[in-house]
Length: 449
Image 1 (cartoon, rainbow, N blue to C red):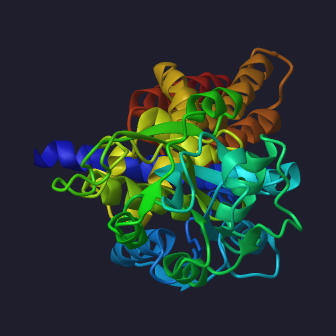
Image 2: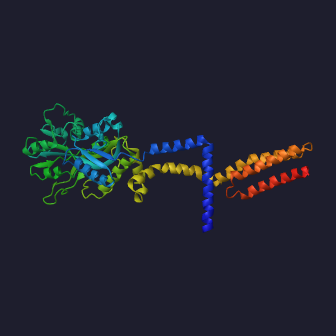
C-alpha cells in the first residue's frame, strides 16, 4: 500500500506541476478560468439575505397566524423574520412589489390583483382554502337564494384594500350589483364590523378567512345567526379558475347540537404565498419547505386533505421557477444530508456539476493526461533538432570545427532535457531519447577519429 501511495503522490505532484506550467504559459486560459469561476459564484449567489419581512393582516386573523407559524419555522433555519401588520390582500401586494418597501413575502388572492400587479410578483403556491363566509341574521333576512337577495340589506364588508371587500365587489357585480357608493354596503375594519353585526346594526356580514379563524366558530354558535348556502358556487367555479366550491358538512363545527345544522355549500378561493421576484432562491425554498412541514403536521385542515398544500392552485399569479421545481421534483435530496444553506447551494449548482461531468467524462475516455501530453510537446523540438543534426552529420564536407559545434549542440540538448524533468510514465521515452543522442554522438566521434 505504501508503494501505491507513493506512486499516486508522485503522479498527483506531476499533474499539478503540469497544470501550473500550463496556466503560466497560457495566461488567457488562466484568466478565463478565474472569470468563469467568479461568474458561476456570482450567478449562484451562495450568500443570500436572511431577512423575511412578512406582510400578513391584523393580529388574530388567520393570515397573521400563518405568518407567525412560518416565522417560527424559519428561525430554525437561521432566518431573521418580521411580521408586518396590513389591511390585507391588496396592501400586501403593493408593499411587496414596491422597490422602497422592505416587505418581501406575504399572502394574497390572485383575483383581487390587476395584470400589472400579478406580473410583478411570484407565487410560491397556495397554502389554504379561503372561503367567503356570508353570515346573516335569520330573523331579518329570509331565505336568500343568491347575493342579489342579500344586497337589499345592510351588508358589512372588510376594509377597501382587503380581499373580503375586493372579491365581494367581483361577486356582487356578477349579479348586476355595484357595491361602490352603495349605502347598503358598509366597509370597515373586520373587528368593528363584527361588533356591529352582533349588535344587529348590520344584517349581513361577509368575511374571507380560513376555517381556523376563531371568528368562524364565534359567529356560527350565535343563536340568531346562520351561514348563507351559496348554491351558485359550482357555476362560479366553472367561470373563475381561482374560485372553488367547498362543502361544509353538517356538524363539522359542533356535533350536538349540530353546527351547521345542515350541509352548506361555500364559495372560496385559496390563499397564495407571494414573494418579491428578486427574493433569493434559497429563501423561497425555505418558505416552501417551512409551509410544507407546517401544513403536513397541522391538526386544523378542515376543507383541505393532508399534504394537499402547498400546491399551485391559483394560476392568476405566475409561479416562481423555484416553486415550479419544488412541485415537479419535491424538496432537494441534499436537505437530508447537509445544512440548509449548503444544501440549497448544492442543489442550485447541480446543473453546473452535471455540465462539467458531461464535458470532462468523455474527455477522460480519451485518456488525455496533461503531464504526459506536455512532456511529449516539450520533447518534440529536441527530436526535430536531432533529426536536423543527423542530416548534417551525413554531409562529408563537414570540417572538424563543424563536428565539434554539433557535439556542443548535442550536449546543450542533453542538459536542457534533463532540466525539464521526467513525469511518471515517461521514463522509457526519456531513456530512448538519451539513447538516440548517444547514437548521434557516436556517429560524430567516429568522423572525428
